Length: 519
Image (tube, rainbow, N blue to C red; front, side, top):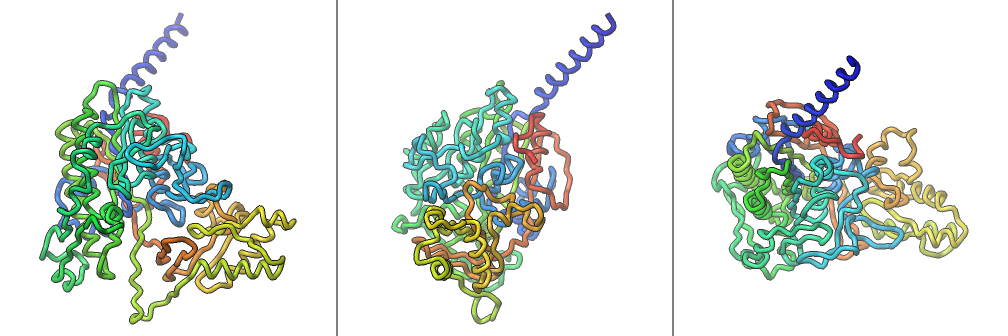
């Protein structure tokens, strides 16, 4: 009898614990990924920030000053996937926004999926490339599907990561048409965004947009006085073929995403329904503006921070008014990299050089042809990776691993290349300094040889049109993260903190299972 009574008490205690966990779970979760957000900018701009945006995040919750993404070259998509899955590309499947598939010999979005058609776009997407669950997926499971889960971002890849497999909707802005777009994979198309496409299309507002300093005439930290005096002014003429790309890199896209998010909260009653926890995940950008007319883009960058600060204040105030920040868990992360514009003026005589991908591949193919006979041994270059033509090599009866090793040894002799690795090199646990590279690749989609370039060199991928140019710089900036609301106590963590650990902290606060790939 005593044994039965003990069992009943333990069972009731377990049920009570589950009930309390469900009751204490926040009504709304807002996950925000801000592309290229930097800690130093936030700290330098602190005196110019309002009380309701970034300063609220820094003062009212957990402020992690440095998160470590571990992999050498994340982008917005791979970084968002790391944070929301709690694991790295090798396990979660998202190496980058755009990947080359050596089997089909196509370069496309990592989420390209012809099984689904687009809404307001010809693009075909689904989150199938995500090999593990996300925070949003786990919330859906924990609420038995009652949660309403939505995401809005400038680009499709970030939107799909944020919505996950179990989301209700994911929307982004088509860079060819400016329309809010989605995929039929998700069952919901919120009316507010559909109405914007019909009644307030971006094309009708472009000519009214004038980006000038928000605080004109006021000194911005570290911006030369001559730039303050000159100011800046950017317009978005419809005649510019890249106008939507420029818009998506400007502060206007953040404001439009903020307005759309507020519409979602109001119209769909997110966080105010009786069916448990809802989710609204958002992507913003603070990437350097590509239309900067001066080589130094700090003025524009700091102005973009101040404008996003206003947008975040507006969003948080609306959440507080309709749901209550005490009932909302907000987590915000950067993407762990910064695509600093090239500023290496020849007059300063800084070290560096220009690297042509096309020339390097030609030299490599000539080397292999001289050794093994004329032919084409190289399939493709993409994002520091060289894909060998495995079929042509096998048809010649050659060992592709040996060809890869010889190619590696040849490439490191070319000016501008600091090192090169074969897949075998990267997969070897005996080389701990390559751990970041191992985490960063999906062996099914990665190339046969990975190249590292010398810092300060300008890398020109002239194997594609339009040509892609970037300056190789090692990221030395700290990327922050924040967790606020739902009883989170103010705290500052200097870091570095593993970016994959954010998912565990969020899952713990939500009383849900961590994502299935959690490190």
